[in-house]
Image 1 (cartoon, helix red, strand yellow):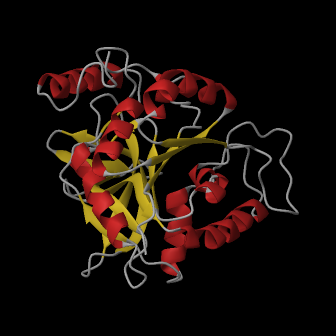
Image 2 (cartoon, one colour; image 1 turned 135 degrees about the vertical axis):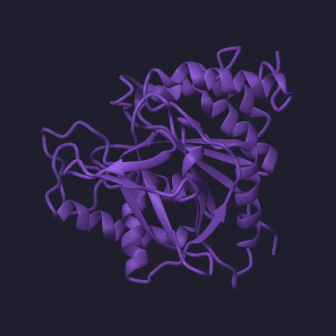
Length: 305
């Protein structure tokens, strides 16, 4: 049986509230490239041939202007709107709700556009070429019906921090067989001197290993996850969430891990993450991108003249 084309699903509908705007379209490259340019470039180099962008209306217009021409001859492209009213039958959207429902709903929004195993990334995170190559090898092997179907690319915690403020990170517990046991969302993660840790709700400081496996929302998933994800979305909506509460993909998968309904292989990577959490991060990201371009890792302009 022929191998299915590998699909990259890009979550690009977030609002960037801490950043102060849609950071997924902020220029970081020497010729105005956005982080997403580099992620798609790395994905295509690793063997992906389809890209599905999950977007809002205003983001879709910008991405089409930027990427339609360079990607037309390189891969298949689809755009899927993440809509507030895309909820299961029997549920309605509160009139006060403005924010998207979160990354879990974003993955559900593209369920009809991914016939086979697919990767999921955030539009505003730079993951590195090695990480895409690692996940591509996993997705290729998942064509075998007896193989593993879901994976998480895990980073060392100290490779995911910023100097400009605290961040939220999904700290992973990995069992002895290399499978994901749990993800715990830690808020207020930062570096204090030589230590890394987080503050709990009472203000107490808890140290975390620098090498702790960390999720940056880089997944390899099988379409068979969709019915389970939709069930979890129903449960989330039934809990009467607040106007700002989100249905997060890591939280939903964490619930399915606890009930042993899914298994997720952890693929550790030595790649260094880059991303813009705070506006002050832009200078740092631009410098690191420039260094990679100067080292010959990426052409400039990235899609040619």
